[in-house]
Length: 391
Figure 1 (tube, helix red, strand yellow):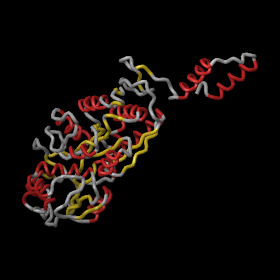
Figure 2 (cartoon, one colour):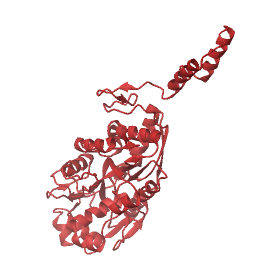
Figure 3 (cartoon, helix red, strand yellow):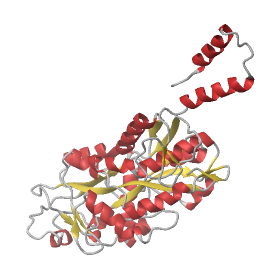
């Protein structure tokens, strides 16, 4: 702060002592403008290449409006990306002094809260449906933030790694039509692996989950039987198996149940050194889940991404594509009602899909492909306040 209200008082006092008692209203107003300007954002804005104003030290070339942004935002939703979002919020607060309070309460709750307008942004691993967007009473934008796969973990005696599963086998196991590990369909995909005659026990999430949405989206895509009998969603009526809460619940149940199989997020599996299967993709290749194979899936599906960016990337084309993965989205209203918060939100979203992506890989999330970043930029640029763009 270079000049605050205390200094203004000192200026007035100095004027009185020197005999200049007729301080004009214009002079006082000018002093107050300097004081407010010095307090309004710390470092001065830096010029962007296009000649507009950018967020201080943003590291991006994109422009931001000259209107001052709020210093606090609220959000709620998906638990899957929370480790990455938490890193974003911490770094962003340190860089720009904007505090972001986020409730990691699940995708469904995130959709509910943005619909009720109790938060500035929502977050969901599952895109909102047309009916949900209509119920929200406005044009809600889906901004892709990052991507991640669901991996199939298992506990089979004598099979430490390398289990291979086809779409037909995996859907059959979770439908309950394949019940033992040494059944011919499983054996056929695992030449040279001695599979025991153990009963298969499936484990699924008992809570509403974006990971379940990705997994059941995949099963619905590759299996007409699954699609007609069970379908997809953050929570479904599972045909069989054990339910457990969270990644930790599913992993714990699989660890203690011989012959079991379940699904968790890649980051959780890697951090906890869990064994997971290779899954046959649309190109006929057995692929291990990784950040690179997830990005390959997104790149393969990018050309078919719709204008509203609500897309499924399960079973995507490409030899290197892992078939069970998906985007997670930040949900925002296109037409904002609070100018200061709208400016702060737009700046944060832009920073997230650019500078924020550098933190993804270390936390086991896949950065967005360049072509998807370009599409997300267009959505962010369309956000407006009182009919005027904010970038």
